[in-house]
Structure formats: structure tokens, C-alpha cells
Image (tube, rainbow over the protein chains, first blue to last red):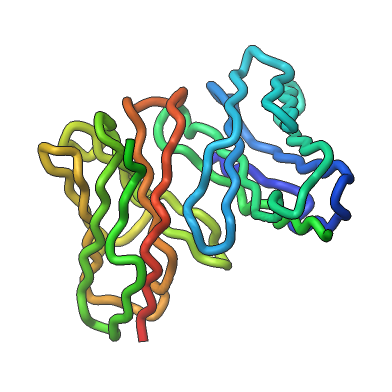
Length: 110
Length: 114
């Protein structure tokens, strides 16, 4: 399977700073999605970027996709304590099930 | 619109027992997927159901099974529980099946096998 890999595994920043997380994957995709998970809870969909898109914005989120490098990045601007969570990228497995990376644990310190 | 509901929230079982977890998708959603989440393995895909038919299956032993009812509610069953089955089991629903769908997750069932 083509599991996505996020890096870094963990990230600590101060409130107000920007947080950048990266995701790499192995094969061609239809789209790439980012999800957030608060501790011990379900995942929440953040944003979907299609394979023919290079950049997408949603509020304080900016996602980029480079299909030539098989990588994506998620930027959260002006981070808040409430952004503390784990962030996962998900890719479709040849149009079948979604495959999630191991996630980046983000801690935003007040 | 109510979100995805998973029951029970917590479950404690002993080795060798079996367990059934339930998932009620968002009204109108016909696809339900199940994932196992552990600290070591991350999120692992178990299976997906669409219109009462299993469409995809992950690499899990036959002890893991599931089904979907005509109202799109889904159950998964794990028989002969092992210590390694301790995990957060997440259910996700989507309107249709396919790579462009957003998944809506429930809060999960935390299963502990003693």
C-alpha cells in the first residue's frame, strides 16, 4: 500500500507562530486529504486537495501538493492552543480505501 | 444533522472473548469504513461497506468481520480476542464510495483486552 508519511513526528511551537507539517506518499493519487485528531477522539476532515491542484486555502490553513515529488505540506498560520492535536494526511489507495500516515503531533504552547 | 455515533465508547474484555462494536453513520451516508488505531501501527484500514456489501478489506485476520444493515448502520465483530487487539476502533462514513469523498469519523470505541 502507499502509506503517507508525515514529518516531523512531533512539533512544539508558541501560540501565534506558524506550524508546517509535511506528508510524502509513494504512488499516484486522485487527491490528498488532511485530518486532525484531538487526543483519543475521532478524526476531523480539514481539507482536500486534488491531484491537479497545487495549492489550496481554508481559513488559517494552507495546503500545497507537489505530485512530482509526491509530497504535500500543511501550514497552519497564527497557531492557537486549540490547534494542539495530531494531524494526518490520507491518500486513496488506487481509488480503494484511504491510507493514513502516522501523523504529526502538534503542541501549541500558550 | 447528527454525526457518526459509535457505541460503546469504552469496552474491557478478556482474551478469548468476542466483541461487537456498532456504528451509526450520518443520515444519508451509505458508505461505512472501519479503522483500527494503535500507537505502534497508526490507523490501519479494516474494511469498507457500501449498500450492505463489503467493498474493500484490509490485511486483518478472519477474526475481524463486519456487516452493514439496510439502514446503513454497521457492526464489526472481533472473535477470540488477543491482547494485541487492544486499540481505538474508528468508524467513518461518507455519502458515496470513492477517492473524492470526505470521511466523517465517530469518536471511536476504545477496546482494552486483558
